[in-house]
Length: 380
Image (cartoon, rainbow, N blue to C red; front, side, top):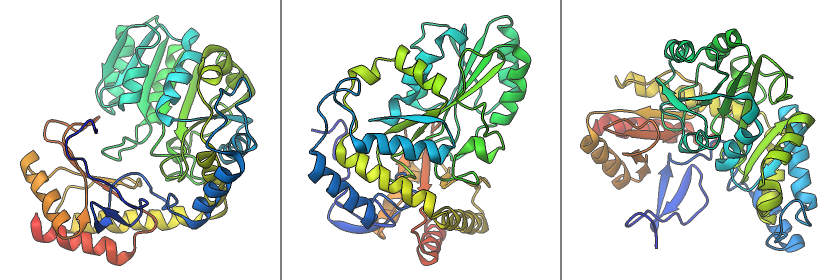
């Protein structure tokens, strides 16, 4: 049983071409931005891990749950982010839940972007502090909320790259404002920025020139603390969440969250695949370069059609064309022509009419991108 009636059934690995409900489609859905989820070396690494280590260790990390693969993912993730260490866990969705517990002593009030992802919205209530939303990507409204709660230590929550629109949060502006508050904390979920933007693929903070030793550092220090969670299951092409940072932060996480001692370690196949995917991402920066070129080409082609398309560098292109009924029609007509562009009627930041969400992959060819543009020209 599925929680939705008649869900589509994906019958192949996600990629530029994939099989859904018995038919091959040109695929612009999901989050496999670098095209690694179906990469031959990643799949081979997963198979080898499964044969060597079984399904998983069947216990938590604090007991006998560590495996060489889990530790290898953490080593590679720390290198990727330029951090002292990393904590690898089974789901990126819970990364904010884990990290926010470690930051509890820094916050008297929580302020969250009104369009923040579900995982941030849920995490915002874990501390039992007052929670208030500020307008989407609006530094001025955040400033007003901070003035309203002057004297309280704020914890501000936002996506780095918003999952439906592809917009980058103005984190640099938020940081400027929060530095005026004394002790303040900025927590970013960068699931869609990781691997896609920034010189080294480290995400929205690197893209905005904010990446440095002060990120995910000592939570006991005064002033502004900036913290970020990432996932390895989207652009990276593996599976699970990761928190890379200072030894002090990681020790605090182990003390404040029961996830390390109470949750099962990531599955062996996922760990093996993730380690190999991290190697590929670090060793082949041309994947990000190709992705950036594809993003630029598609955005330019859509603007040439007269469609309102933002100029973000991210691989998520969001379209609002008429009302929900019209966008459902566009989705259905594209699918009949062999192209999948998902329509989201009810999601974080969707708005009352919903959105068409185009995901661009490094593995899309110029011909594939141009075909999508041509089809949209015919039906919009």
